Image (cartoon, rainbow, N blue to C red; front, side):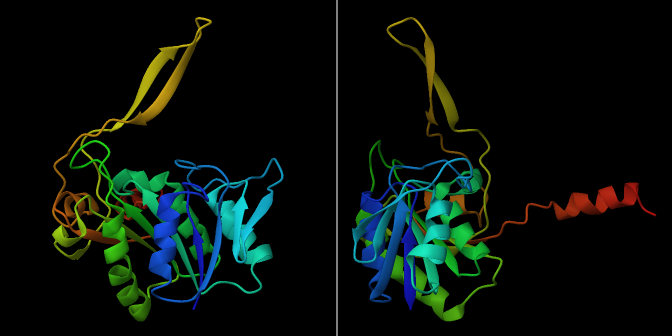
Length: 253
């Protein structure tokens, strides 16, 4: 199996090294195309208004001056001799659950792989649930192939991306794997911090302020809170099917 690795944390991110370890438990044919610089929160952006440069950093590895979607596009069209059999995006530094999935560059890398007709998986390691700065990479290392191998053996629909999140607990404290749906937080965790530069001008930092919500059973949020690996099938179709039927009644011909 030919596997392409990408991420949104950048070519030198520790999570990418963890992902390579996980991938090598599945195959020896590993290729890497990852952003030259961190692209967190860039979502499904692609670079349309400027050239995208690449820098070879290994026999089968490139740093790409672009987004995760750029990385997957260039790898499959230009950098690799043949299209990969699988795209793995991550392992992200921090969870990608609930509404995070809509702007996550990690999810976007996998989404673009799916768009190219390649089975794709996003992987993320939850952090800072136990305490500020907690980030147990060994949990992703130990549980990565345990989550991936059954998925690869079973397969999944061509319009689906698999979203895997590892909880912020030590490897031996993981309670197991749960198949979940995307949750939704009951309070926004995104906030802005206004500051002033030395010339008296305002500038802002946008970031997260961690708050625990009360998610429903069966959601990715609940699974991560409870110490389980979460696996969710995601897709690009954003149509709200229930309200769609209501709207059709309004303009019923």
